[in-house]
Image 1 (tube, rainbow, N blue to C red):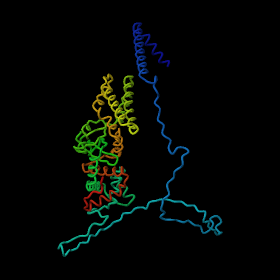
Image 2 (image 1 turned 120 degrees about the horizontal axis):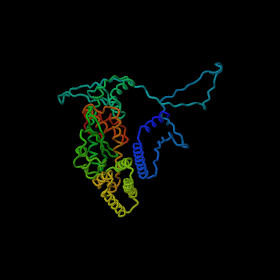
Image 3 (image 1 turned 135 degrees about the horizontal axis):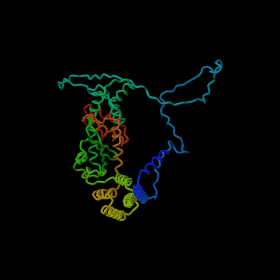
Image 4 (image 1 turned 90 degrees about the vertical axis):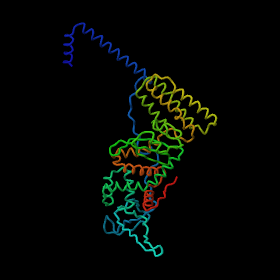
Length: 453
């Protein structure tokens, strides 16, 4: 501190009076400028002062206090009973014991049986028909995979490991060796899953047909890679069906390819222009719009932005409230309020804004003015695209822990397997039983699909 004061004194002694006066005026102007900036910041803050960012508290784990505890449910069936008895007293070693039948300690434990590899030889006997004058052969056994060296249980378990649990082929190989004692290579597993997807393509076509016949469908897309090249994974889902496609393009031709040129339903999506011609009608996600408004609010704290921000949020809140009141209002009253909401939204979109954020957002509102309140015109239609984001999340997790796909065949296998797996999940069906039954049926020559919607 003493050394710093000495340096200041040396500088002051070396400067002339005119230089010191100029320095005082310069510092005075700088202080005035900083005070003006501080006043503007306080004026733009709607609370009068900046609120400190508080750390979000984690919700307390477990059930709330006072709630009844929960333990694992006891199994309905006991496979084995193990009785532990004593022949003499463990304390004195000499006296005999008399059993107390009414006082016993019971403990129920569940465990799994260690699996082992089982090799089965299938022998198909051949015969000569004296009537047809030709050789005939017995059919395939129920659990036989024609020309396959791995059984259906291994194949379907590998499919679930890959697409449900996100394991790599190396991890799958190690798991089979550790838990089952099965030796299999990475390439054998990869080629097997690709073959399974080809045989299950007939089931996937049933999903495509049902999606194109549904009254509305959610659509979304996310980044993907095939052998390091950028692609896009598209999803088209509703409450019972899920369909995935991996394409190089992010343009409007992909939604038209998925839904078909003549799709007459409603497409729910974000504001990507690729969906502008998808479906007969469209509903743009209001949650995406609110997120964009909030993001701009974090960057722009001006009074002008906040005034219009509140106004648009009020319009959206009134629209959602009207949707909830649909059944309690008379039909003429409901449609009169809907007409007034559309007029409010259109007038807001046509406002001459000076704020740069609202100039950009107003163009979006004006472009999609007829696609923001479709959910009020169609009963039961959601106002957001959250379902598509939830259904695309398993693929995002898969992407984050893997290299996505290394070939076009692997990408095609991913499309088919994930579409069927997520459809089973939405319908609360057992995927293990379905995949095994469908694969064996198609592999043994039955082309009829098992899925029907």
